[in-house]
Image 1 (tube, rainbow, N blue to C red):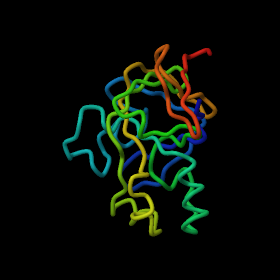
Image 2 (tube, rainbow, N blue to C red):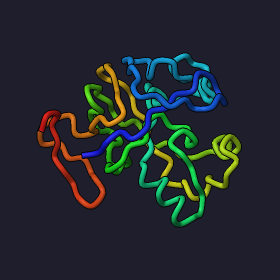
Image 3 (tube, one colour):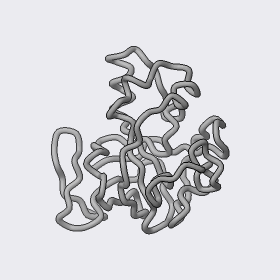
Length: 173
């Protein structure tokens, strides 16, 4: 099972990400106070799948890889995704329902890096983050997400790929 290490939102496009200890996830909207929830994000005007900008997730292990293999230090606030999680392979969650604490999410699509991200962080992250840019998810059941919350399967029998193994998970297990 994975864990939420960092929660960040930005109030408007290009603004620095603000770390939080908790945030409210709202069905059909996203994270309270975030630029995409208020439709003021850099890509807000571009069409995408419904809910594809409500919540974005990033693997903490990728931050470790950037540091060790590429010499690039990037924090949980710099990568511009809302949730930094450890212990879960996010690509396996595309098309899957999963829980982050009390919130039910559904993985919509990957979240590849872009030149805008590289410009904002001022570091050469575009190439190292190819196929490692994170996950976009929609909120199916709202609630509060907190740092330290578990990330796991939404339904009994569903598998969530973690680093090194596949685990079944049910909230409360």
